[in-house]
Amino acid sequence: MSALYAVPSWLVLVLGIVAGVGIACGGQLLVHRFVPDDTFNDDNDLNGYISGTIVTLFAVVIGFVVVVVWQQYDAMRDRVAAEASDVAGVWHDAVGLDPRARAAVRRDMLAYVNVMIGEEWPEMRSGHASPKGAALIMDATTDVGGMDATSNRASNAQVTIVQLLNDVHAQRDQRLESNQSPAVSGFMWAIMLFGSAAVVVFCYMFGASHRLAHLIMTGLVAAVIASMLVLAFELQYPFRGDLGISPVAWTHLRAHIDDMDAHGAPAMRM
Image 1 (tube, helix red, strand yellow):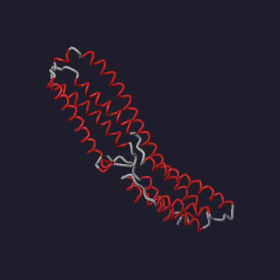
Image 2 (cartoon, helix red, strand yellow):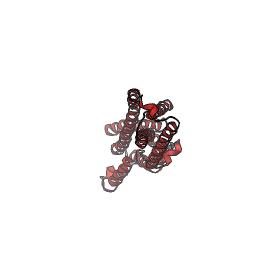
Image 3 (spheres, rainbow, N blue to C red):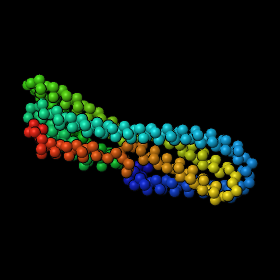
Image 4 (spheres, rainbow, N blue to C red):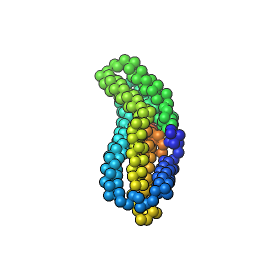
């Protein structure tokens, strides 16, 4: 299934809808080929009551799942912004360090930003990560932690930067973990697929005077269900596929660092 994240999201959606509609409509044609439509006419009221109950329960389940994956997606987008903001904070607060430590920390942070853009984000599309990210955080922590602060200013900057680097490390770990553990478990997928099949099968149980109209309605039900399943599939890993969270926060940060290095005060440059 992971290979599907290499396929454009719009194509996955089209294929999912075509497959869902094809299976649903094919099943209906098969059922009504062997069982005449008139057989279901007398039970339409009962079928409507029972199917309405099942559809309501299924809507609650699939709606809950879509909300969960969407919330995780939004939370990870906010976490990426917070991670980039903390890296920017390290760069800014390094102004209080001695020149050697300041240059080393800022060099590590610039390298970290470049690794995020050029290596880690492309790797996350396939579920992996660059080992350089953690190494650069540790390098910067070593540079700051091993510095002998000779003033209150340097000591305050040292404490603040170490805390920020710890936050960056924690945020990166959570980001990578979310890219390894899907928001929708296999058990939840099984329930959703079973519910989808139940809703579609109940569409077969109605008698209709116009077979084509009945077929179109069944196809529309299947198309809506398939689109919801594809949406959950695409969002369950926030950093994979076309809908994956982009590295725009990092590109903006790199542009900001470049601007400070080119036009900022001497203490704000590399």
